[in-house]
Image 1 (cartoon, rainbow, N blue to C red):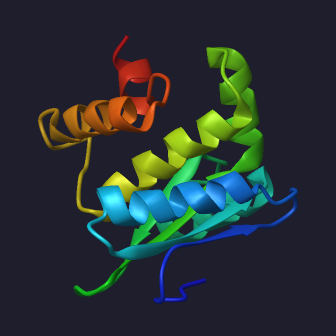
Image 2: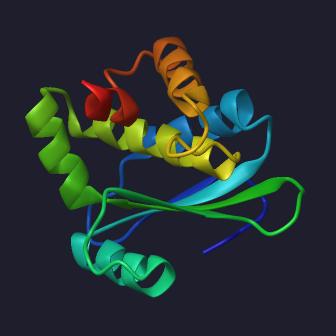
Length: 146
């Protein structure tokens, strides 16, 4: 999936959303320090397959992050489930595009080395700060800690 030239959003099984491509470029420049990433937006079946293959977990999830090896101008790949995003947007009362942006931001922070399961709140604070700057509703980490 990697292009290594900049941030790309690939839509598989759903219609393209040009605003998300623009948001990916914004994340690249503002959050990732100019380093690019690729993002696949696909269905639950694809996310389940990737989760099973790379994490040995046999279920669909909302976002997966695959950091690039080594350093450079490319930080890695993301995969986001459109179906999970749609359900979560409905559950939390905001648009599907906002939910996809929340998931993309969360994934990019993981690509940058943050890990909310082991960093004593460092990722949660970064996600909250970036959500405010980007005008996004409540994020993944805050939802779980409520």
